[in-house]
Amino acid sequence: MGLRGRQVLLAIASIAVTLAASPFCAAADPPLDPDPWFGKDKLLHFGVSAAISAGGYGVGKAAFGGYAGPAILGSSLALAAGGAKELIDLAGYGDPSWRDLAWDVIGTAVGTGICLSIDAIVHRAASTDPPPVTVSPTAGAKGFVVAVPFAF
Image (cartoon, rainbow, N blue to C red; front, top):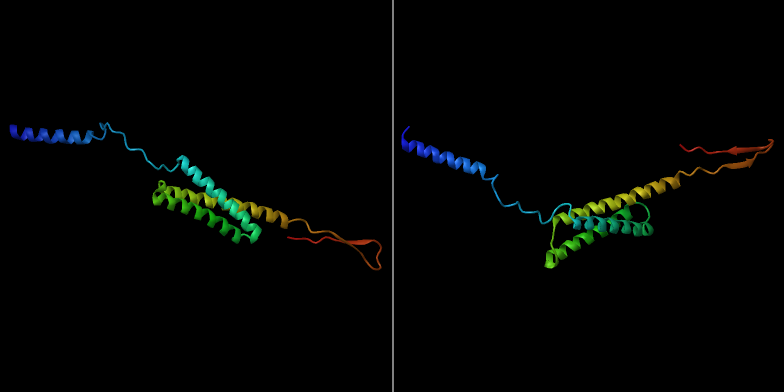
């Protein structure tokens, strides 16, 4: 190989080594995420959405009874509040974020889920009270007959 071939080979090797080592020698730090998934504001979105959905569930329980009506009311109020907040941010009064909206949805689901669980437990406890024991005198017999209904 001649002198010219060695120079070309050396140039190619130098470029390859430089390109391979450049990611390791970079002095600039990677940019920080301006909207982290677990930022302080995400906790606020989660908590406020859970509280609004739970409050709406309580109002719905007093107004409608059952399970579906309160769950729909609580969830709707919380999601409407979170959506309105993001629309206000989008209008230029804050920093709009899909991650904030995701935490609103998660908080709404948790708040409504907790209310549904508590309501189901309370309803089940109220419906499984033992039936009353009835005592009635019988005709022609001495004493009383005790009737205890069984529920399975």
